[in-house]
Length: 109
Length: 249
Image 1 (cartoon, one colour):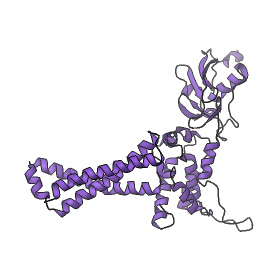
Image 2: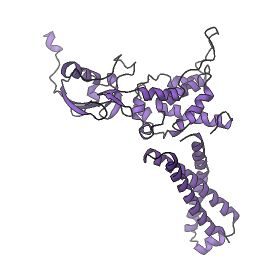
Image 3: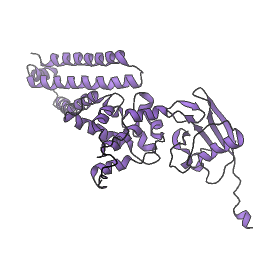
């Protein structure tokens, strides 16, 4: 890991820390209040705030996890060079695509 | 009866396994008489002088100053000269091998070249800002920079932290705790002029950011230094240098 990757990983971690706490609070609230899927969708659909919140969450998680996986593949898997970059970037893109698809499913009207 | 007062009680021999050969070698078993206040280096020396003169190992000062006698003793890297057998032998058994994470030359002697090459790669060489004709620069011992440098400057390059480090084992490019600790002492040396180059060197792949903060170096350092703290200092210093535009990410 070099300084660039370190900055990205620590930066996304700093962003994820409050986002995860809010995410957990939202889960806690939704289950305690007994919200149905329809109740939740009525709050999230068309909401720019929820789109930005979970969009940022997905982007930060995809970058953070891809860098972490890159370290694991390099140190424990012995990968390097283009193979390592391909695996890490591919994993990050897959996470971003899956996450953004889920965000779109709940925020698009 | 003064003579009998100093006679040592009979002790069973120690069962000692010592690595023989290069990386493809194996442990050989020896029986070594147990003595009071015996160090692991005494054991190795006994085997070489009394049992097998072909045994290769490295030592010099025998008092924990030179850093040349480090070996793996019962699975842990240690200075053998400062390790009493009574503290580490398990059921009268000792297993002594070469330091981990370094190429084995023969038996207990490792090739320290990669260790010192990484020291060079981390810009661990002092870059003076003055000549011998200039006045000596006054350094206040209580200044934060000097306090930080003092905390790491007593390293004697024994390689124990390097052998104990998981990241060194997993990442061949990682500079290791000793080289990074040295870099940190120089970053805090106000007389040194190599700061930016050094921060660039330790910011590259395999530099300080590769450290996982397992703290094995701190746990094993016989000089009770804390290279993990030095590496954390380098991480802060490199980020600050980047924020100031002094180094590129």
